Length: 430
Image (cartoon, rainbow, N blue to C red):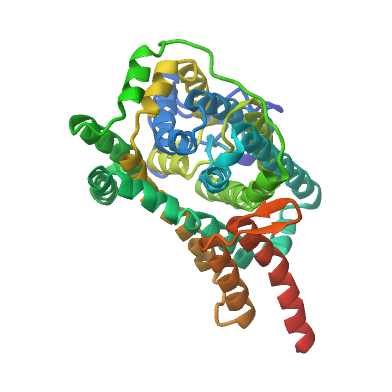
């Protein structure tokens, strides 16, 4: 029986992992497959590494957007468990907070958190619908509807639209922001192994300590930390629905599609498996996790590249380790003290971190273009992308009836509608 067959005959839940070798050692050139595991103590250690890898990004999103940290962490753990179940244990992944939601949530802060949750829930429903279509029609349908030139543009404009917010936080406490930024850059550049992949988290910790020493922490938040209970139930709240906020958030669907499909392909390449048939399941799973988060008070989720880094470093792709990570996240979600600690992070630290993070989102769009070898000597590619990017970066805001749409929405609509239309006109001319 081949490894691929082993992978697909474990039952619908993907439980029943086989012990890899003696469970203690990994021979050079071998990998621990998704359906395998090491001994449970070692598996738990790998799982804890995945928790550490996702922490910085997953907790930074609610910190920036004002969402409850412990609630977001709870739905992150639940979402990871659902993802493993729906993909039948074949696609190892952790579902953490998606950075793509930062822009629409930041832009819609004035509408209230209930309306923001309604937008998160709506994005989740649309993503589930896309996943169902992909599952029925096959993953190639995505390439036809959203070629790399379109996907890359939407991802880039979402990140670059946030630049003013990052600069504003940076300028609020410039010295703290500089220390945070330098720590991130240095750790990322010279940090050995896994430490180098935790540059954002290390930078935030260094910046927080510097702010604490120099009196840069808000007194009221420090007082709230002292008063917070060690154990408590995460704060849950329901959504409301405002079309203006929903329209602002819907372009995030494109980013989530790109991230989930990219994750499936990356894991397949690393583990030596064909997982194309799991693309639809992955989208459905992330859509369900995001829907539940929006229904209960958490931020939207996505697959995490940080955890791909852990798998690449350890060569362990066992989904058993991800069950450990999911359980750990759920346990931590029941500590209000932990959530209060995260909310003591000052503006300067957030500014230093987001100066990098928002830029990384923009560069991810460029990376999509580079990997797909998008031809920007083609006038259609060049002009449509140029217009969409400026609409997003400049935050073009116009009303359409009673609905107010910002730069992310207009830029995304422009590229999604403008590209196929211009491509059709170019073909007619020829």
